[in-house]
Image 1 (cartoon, rainbow, N blue to C red):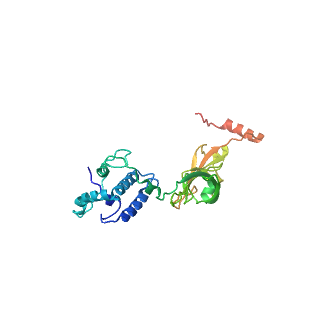
Image 2: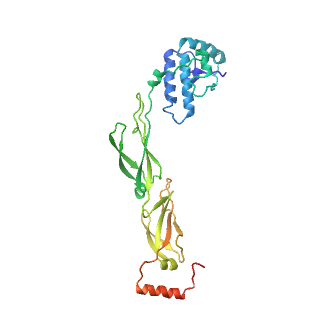
Image 3: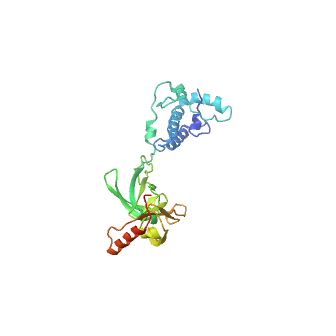
Length: 297
């Protein structure tokens, strides 16, 4: 069976401590490793059990004297602290085998009164909002209303920073559920969903936009004006470009969070007019008669 240094578990350097010092040390360590505060850590739960175990032994004068004799032989006389090691603890058990040396196999409940008086941080709350792509790019302040646990509506002012990423969360400190026994309130986490529009579609740090051109522009090539998220830019359409091809314009996309920007990706789509004038139709017939081009060849 592995010896457990209960004084070290409570962060005490010596066994020459008063009952009040043990109590204060227990409160500090229990608050630090309380499972309600460290929900993501399995280690914290086991550590919390050891803290309660140590307090149960050291807060009782009889078991403390018995434990001190063992502690002096293993730690005090050697003038060095024993390294804390986890003793065997059955799954779901509140106390280890080492603890049972002092209280036997009888199951003893953790000091519930002590634990109930510990300050516990309130639970965090998560929600999500949708913002337009342009608003996410430039940043904005948005008001949202949420229903509290008491059923009342509460309005929050949320500052969405310029260039926030899709799926990123904004944290509002202390706006979650109320703490217990004087503990801090939880936080409110707001997930940002960026909404694409008819002109632009966000792909990571790149922005995809569709550019529609005529058959003669695709065949002959042309410089045309298109919109980026900030300004109008000139795009060179090379002769012979195919529908579905992409033209990449560097540094005209979304903000990358490092002072730079992604690309603007122009996806080309050739559009054939649904209605032709008499002259246009004659020209297309003439082109058909003189051209040897066969797209199915």
